[in-house]
Length: 518
Image (cartoon, rainbow, N blue to C red):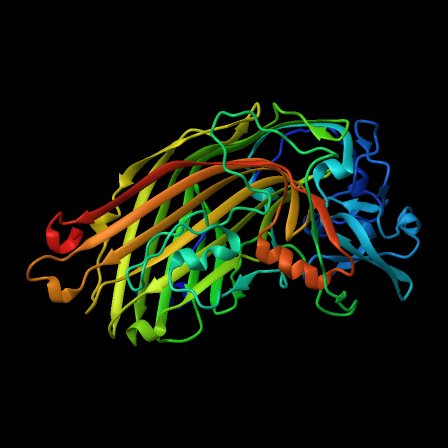
C-alpha cells in the first residue's frame, strides 16, 4: 500500500506546480552542449551562456566555458559549485565578480578555494540585470512533459520552519508574509499573503511596473562565517525525469504530473496520532508560457511580458484527523525542496517552478476528523502582459461548502496557504532571478461541534486568491536568513518590483442561523 493510500482516510497542507515546454528563444548559443555536457548534467545544472553576440554582459561577468560538463558537483544547498580543473574562464573568478557557468550556476563570487585539482566557488544571489546589460528574451512555449526535470535541493535554505509562540495561521505566516489579524485556534482562518517575496509591493492592477536599475534600492544583510559544503558529501543529486516524494521535516511532499493536471500531494508523516493530507492541483489544457523581456543598458523594459495561459481551474482535496485532539495540532511553513525545471540546450536561462505552503491544524477532541474538497475555474491569463498585471477571475465549479464533513466534539478545522511560482531566469535555488508569474491561494475550513447537531451543524469555509508578477530576485525572508549562515561576506543585491493583486475573496457559514453565524 502506498504512503498516499495510508494518508487517504485522514489528512492537510499544500501546493502547486508548473513546468514548460520547448519552442524557440533568442538569444541562443549552444555552449551547454560542448565539453562533455551530458543530458543528465544539463537537466541538473542547466546549459551554458550564449556567446553569439546576441547578448551584452555586464563588465564584471565571467563566462565559464564547457557548460554543464565543466561542473563536477554542487553542494546540497546550491550555493557552492565545484568546477573541473583547467576550465577556461575559471581562472578569472575572484570575489566580487559574477560567475556564469550555466543557468543554475550563476551568482556573485564570495569565495574561491582549491579542492584538490578542482575549484570550489561559493555564490551569492544576483539579479537578471546584474548579469545582462543588453538582451531580449522572447518565446511562446508550450508545456512538454518530456522536458520536465525534477530537481531536489536537499538542503534548501529556509526549507522548513515552525514559528515559535504563534496562536493563529496569520502568525504562522509571518516568516513569508504579513499578518492581518487574529483567529483563535481551534477554528482556523485562511492565511493572508503567505509568500510575498522580499521585494514585494502591492499595487493596483493595471499600473505600469517600474523597475529598479543601477540606482535602485539595495538590501545589505549581515552574515555569519561561511560554512562550505564538503566536496565529498552533501551534494546536489542528479535531476530526475519522474516525480518522487521527499521528506520535509515531519512532512512528505510529492509533485506529480498526470494528463491535464499539475499538482502536489503532501501528508504528515511523523506519527500515527495526526494524519494530514492535501492534493492541490492546477487543471490545465494547452499550458503555454509567453515571454518578451527586453533589457537595455541594465534595465528591464517597462512593457515586458511574462504570462501563463491554459490554467483552467484549481482544485483541492483535504482531510485531517487527530487521535488526541488539540494536543496533536501542528503549524508549519515549508518551501518545498524540489524544483520542476526545463533547461533547454542553446538557451541561456531556465524555466523553473517552485512552491511553498503554510498549514495550521485546529482539531479539538479525541478522534476528530475533517474532510473537504472543492474546485474553482480560472478565467484568464496569469502574469504580466506589456508591463500590466493580468487579473483573471475565479468561479465555483464544485462548492467546498457541500463537502465539509467529519466528527468532532468541538469546532475543528484547518487552514493552509500555498504559493506556486513559474519563473524564467538564472541563479541559485533559494534566490532565483528573472521574470515570474505566481498564484497565491489560502483556504480555511471549519466543521462545527457534533454537540450542536441537534440544533444545527455549523460549517464554514473561506477562500482568498491573489495573482502576482514581477522581475527580479525573489526569496523569502527565512531563506535570506539561512543564506546569511552560509555566505562569508555581506549579501547585497538589488530588489525589483512586484505586483500582487487579489482576484477572489469569499467566506460563507451555513446554516445562516444565530448559533452558527453569531
